[in-house]
Image 1: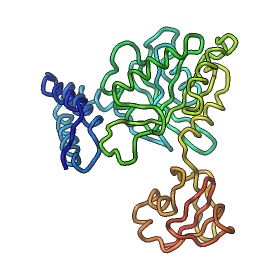
Image 2 (image 1 turned 90 degrees about the vertical axis):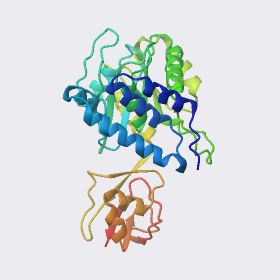
Image 3 (image 1 turned 90 degrees about the horizontal axis):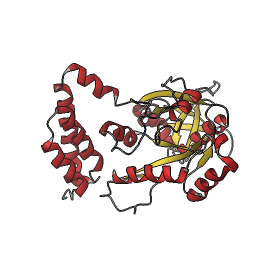
Image 4 (image 1 turned 180 degrees about the horizontal axis):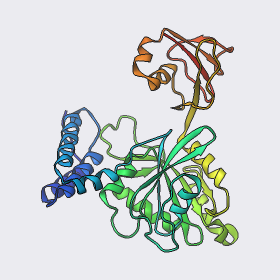
Length: 326
């Protein structure tokens, strides 16, 4: 199958050949990998690019390698959510308010220079938020784009004390130029060659206390309608619990609990799955070998009655309790 490489890929490839430093070469390879069409014809090329990135990373000096490593935030918790937005919208203040991270917070733009992760707790679920440098007039650095692409979802923060629509439009333009779209995706099911990266997104209007009459937020909410969820908050004082709830809901996941035969379910440490996941998917998420060895399971919640025996293809629901037998 031919690779059918996109113009974006070919441009990144030309930039790679023109790159003078190892760091620049890694950036171009990462870009090539991100915009490459995903189908069987590119499997070999995709593996080759990953190998080249790994070899180049090993070859650079210790200081540069450390800098490269810090731009790749390892995922933790139920999901990784990148917090992005224009300068001085209060991103860092939001992350500091609802996670254990302590980013630099100041009243001037471009305070955040690096990515910083923090864990947000919603009920019995932990979600990783990653505070990022602002997306302004200058093209975003390669490593920031990679963080956005790797994240499971986005929180886009805009300033409600100013023209929120203009801020959002500018940011969407930047992302669109890099083949990043907001929402669950509208590409045809058979379009395997699409290099577009769709992201679940929550639009966060910050500084609601400075939005006179709520006009800016109403305009923002009217723009997106039901396409993307939106929320108005004040990072220093208001609606932060609802922000946590909306973030969890935006991820469109569910919690499933486990119990041992004769024991009580552990309601403190749920398995996090995509909605409509099956029993087999739940077993695989615990351990691949468990799914293979599983003889049967019982479920409390979505069965016809509590403790009913179910098959591997049984579709689970939020809050189900499963008892796996091997």
